[in-house]
Length: 203
Image (cartoon, rainbow, N blue to C red; front, side):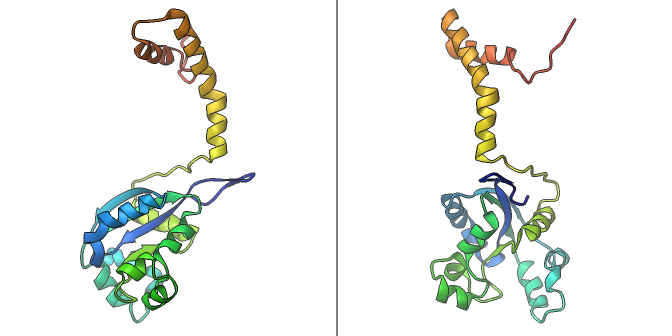
């Protein structure tokens, strides 16, 4: 889930975002903004128990604000989201702004926490602090999901050039020779029959 460098290429990275209970009703608007910012979303709507909140925020256990945080985060539904793009952790943290609402309003008045947060406790949104935290938090919120690392642009381009284009070129050449009445269906059938990844049967 961390960045993997291939020369100058970078794999897509993932981070966890949470729309907290007090702005749950604004979730659709915030999700629209996230998509416009170039991030992709896998989401899950749920309500955490205080026990689940305690597990999720275990690094804050023992701090004076911990009981208030547990009560707040379990007070209503949330939207947990896996966001994906290059450098997702840093990018999402930049979009939401500082955890302190005072700092957010002073230093980044256009950030989401400055717009929607009402206090340092009720700061509207959560973002993973690091690659390692993103891994842990995504596993916590999405326990049944298995997220493969996304290929880089270079890997995708190489795969298309190596595997897809030669087969498609052969299919289009055969299509021109045959001149069928329904070329789209003919080509689809041809590609199914000539899939290079399909196991071959020998007699």
